[in-house]
Structures are given as C-alpha cells and as structure tokens.
Length: 125
Image (cartoon, rainbow, N blue to C red):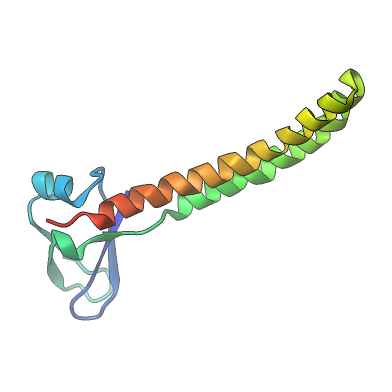
C-alpha cells in the first residue's frame, strides 16, 4: 500500500510503500515515529503514525479499467454467437446478464481498494 505524509516545510507529499494494513500494525512494526526525507526540499522530517495517511491506488483504478475495457468487447463479440447457437428467450436474458460481469469486477476492485484505504485511515494510535 502506498502511504503519504506532508513535508513540514514545503507541504509536498512524501510517499512510501508499506505492507501494513492499519496504523496500529504500522506502529507495532515500524515504531510510532517514521523519519522520511522530502524529495522536493531535501529536509529530514519525522512523522507520527497519525500524520501518515493512505490514498486510493491509481494502479487499482487502471487495472479495473483494463478489465472493464477488455472484458466488455470480448463479451459483446461472443454474445451473438452464444445466442444464435442456443437460441431462446432465457438464453438471451442469461447472455445479457453476462454483460454485467465486467462491471461487477470493475466495481469490486475499486471497492476493495477503497475499503483498504479507509481501514488504514480510520485507525488511530
């Protein structure tokens, strides 16, 4: 997960990666104070765990978009073949329901990322 803290001098966001899911877990393994060097001004900053926050991942958004943009055309291509082969009203309704699968995957990826960020940002030490 990508975590952020703001530089005390230039207010630039300093980012770093961590595998910890909550602030409490982060404090247990990393300590209550994290020292980082600002990329913008070069000042060494010390941050309390409560001053560190997580943001939603752009990578998760990109992956979800790729699944949606690739999955939908593939289903649209194979949908008429499926309907013509098996025919019938219920087959058409079922095949139409298949078009919802990329949307469900897209929303589920974004929801899980949002939950992960909210879980980290909600806890205080």
